[in-house]
Image (cartoon, rainbow, N blue to C red; front, side, top):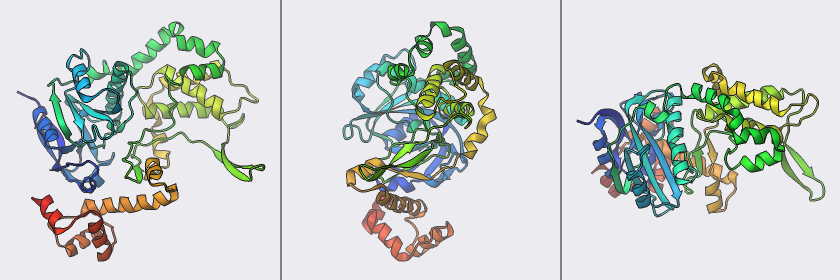
Length: 430
């Protein structure tokens, strides 16, 4: 008999993930089996984690409302390997075989695209544990396939996922959290392992012996620079990219410089000097990187500090040595992250950024795209509250009650933009 778990399933199918319906899709949380989840995916239903409402829409899917999930999803976008080739690989996988794999709706339209789901026997209720599980699975498949992960939307607990295009495979295997992480004390033990075999690590030898530039050029492809929480990439028809509640970013300082010869201005980094708390900034930024990527290795963290020190600081006055950087990285790596959660709270967060892909496709500036982005987000807010079973007058009242103060004419234009004719409404409600 299959185990059951709580999961939120959309009340409607989505034939096209880029449709306007997505913005105001409704979800219902219920107890299901893995087989029932697979059926929902085949029926093109969207699914998400569990929030503090049994029935909810997009606006309710926030970190503050999130409660738990039994699903760790990993997206494989724009891959060299086709879905069928990936299926052959997972079928014979000895380690971390997914519970379910399926091709996503843009597979074959925007490259090879598919998704792997890992079903847990018990729910994950902590965001950090979820991210550790996600990072572990992503790292595994990066090693196996030799390709870097291009879409980290699965690493966001509030994310929802569309159903399949036309191929779904169910392997039936489920996992405990410890199966994915190896041990609940994984991070503590990794610190000890890193310390114990330090002399045998090529990177550490290079770190102390090579020039800074040589270290950076040799390892930048292995240990990429971490500056902020990865954002879910939006479709090029969407002018905005939403910023999650748990978004974090390392602060940089810039100033405008004038090019007298060309008669123009350009933006230039303002480097941190002696007396401006360089050591403290390195330590805090190392902590921020751990908060962004809890599974980050010591070598990766150390490389990032060296990279940051070289490009964003000036080594004048009280000289900072490689050994100083190493000690700062080690202290940050061993630190208890729970003591630094206030850093997350202090970060100023914007609601969205402009989608560069949208600007490029439509040949417009970011300022122009920003106005369109605000309109698209307002459209989404209207869609979240709009009820096809209510009259236009009733819908206007609902919108006003939810703080969306629009006129009947604005609502009419919204319906026209989204193709919500009487014929369309009857189709959706059937």
